[in-house]
Amino acid sequence: MEINNNELPLISVLIFAYNHEDYIEQTIKSVIDQKCSFSYEILISDDFSTDKTLNIIKKYQIKRPDLVKIIANKQNLGLNTTFINAVKKAKGNFLAILGGDDYWIINNKLEMEVQLLLSNKEIFYVHTEFKTFNESTKKITNHCNKNWHSVLMEKKGKKALIEMLCHNWSGYPLSSSSCFRKAPLLKGINNHPEILDYNLVGEGTIIHSSMTYYGGLYAFIPIQTAMYRIRKESLSHYKTKIEQFNYQKKYFLLRLFTAKTYELNKNEIKKIHFRGMLNLYQTALGLNTINEFQIFQKTQNTGIWIDIIIYISKFIVFRVVYKITRKFRSKIKKILRNLIK
Image 1 (cartoon, rainbow, N blue to C red):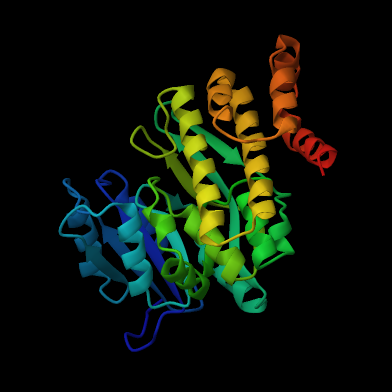
Image 2: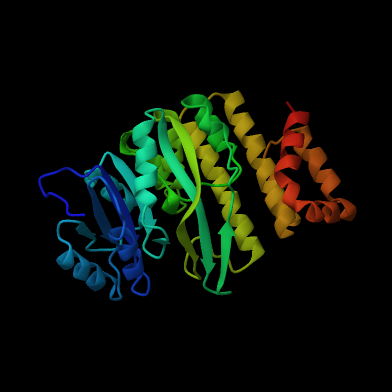
């Protein structure tokens, strides 16, 4: 569809690129090919790429100057600063995010999500199923979670923030599959900039803390809309299981840090701390990095329940049973939580 230059777009699609010359064309095409009944803009941020990424982006800006806008950093600023700049320059009331190496796999992705947001003012964040492509193994994985559930579909405000920081959902919402209202994110960025200053790349925490605390409900569409690439250089690629565990450990500490920036009370932070340690423990079981978890656990004041769980985990039989029942992890997790309420 043609967009009137004098018309403000309803939604801004933010694409973040850095040395993505092999992928960026497919990414941009997947957005241009969207069939929408509303106006939108494509705002592409290039973080001082050293390959041909920017040249490819400029080619599409020349083809569609009404649609494609470029933010070309004159030096490498990193994802977090690039993210903030893009959000503040976006003209739409809604935002959709797409990594420069990801792409959408259906052409009505935006239409479905925006119509859902327009039809229910209580909904502030909507996401979908997705696929992953591992470049190393050439394997495509279908993330079919048609029964995605979370209390975030019913709670908002401070209560929702606490549940989000406890990761009380059946699967992490992929940014490249999502669409959300811009206003709460701007509040989060302005009121809690230190979250993005934390030494961990990724915009997910600032988005979800903003959407829950300053926004409203979450919604889910059980349709695969995006392809997420797992590359050797990407954040989701780990050379070793210990490296993967250490990332999850840092992410746990980021959630605690976020709780403090929102000035949650001691009991609320204690709840987030325990749930986070329980999640980290389950990660360690799956990765066989129990020793690393125990070393980290000694630096944390976790209380007797985690100590009991750690003691049980020392038995080989327990580990074998856990691995056999990994597909029932969410149920096991729920049982453990009910025991300590």
